[in-house]
Length: 64
Picture 1 (cartoon, rainbow, N blue to C red):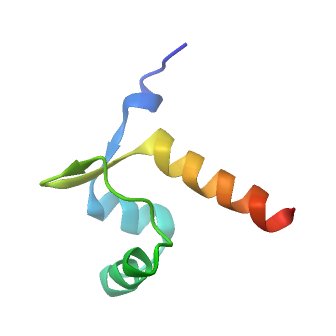
Picture 2 (tube, helix red, strand yellow; picture 1 turned 30 degrees about the horizontal axis):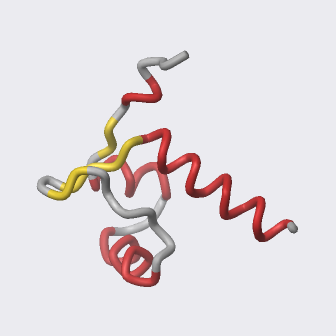
């Protein structure tokens, strides 16, 4: 079942708030591969469900 939350798009400003980082920190993390790629390139936007999935998958691999 798809919910409205699954279809939520995050702008860079939303990502900064969600992650609690500055714009500079965000771009350093993005370059290092610590942030998933955006699903929309211009303007850059991330699908909230994909961001959550990215970090949950990463956490599960680190705990293994």
